[in-house]
Amino acid sequence: MKRVSQRVFPVVILSILFVILILPSVSQGADFFSNLKLTEISIKGHKLHIKGETDLPKGSMLNIHINLAGLNGKHGKRDKIKIHVNSQRFFVQVDLPKKGSWHGKLAQIKVIFKPNEQGPDIQAKVGNRGEKLKGAKAKKENGNKYLEESKIMIL
Image (cartoon, rainbow, N blue to C red; front, top):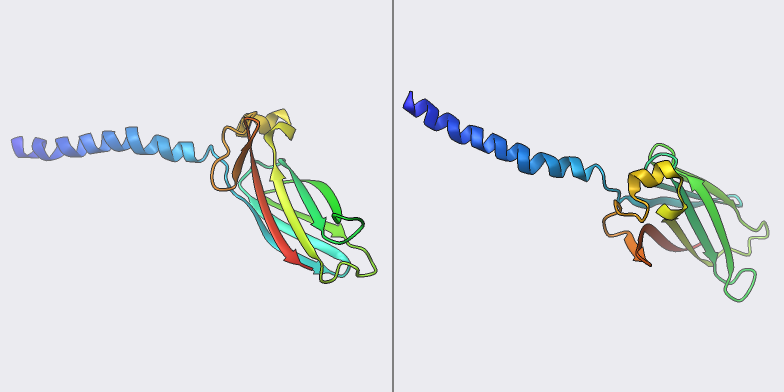
């Protein structure tokens, strides 16, 4: 009987430690957001297609900034587009000039998530100041965190 209790005791202790130490960190990981990724940038006709994925809550609003160097002015053409996340994906089509003056031009595409521009339900999940944003794409400005992904390409 003594041998059985000597074997069971360490197993019980290890099980308790597992529950106390490991499980809270697993559940906390689900509360953080870090994925914001441009997965495809392509041209179809006179439209620029931008696709991406994220772990942000459904309904989050993303800002997409497009800068086409050498178009419409000294610093290029800049567009800002707002789109919503749907089932951890986002997609937008942007009209390009029909004359093809964008061929061979350098383009920078940025997708940005800012908690302070979200509705109260999204802010409750990510934190008013982005407290639950983590990872390499999390940036900080004026005490607020945000997520940003950027790609440069030749059209």
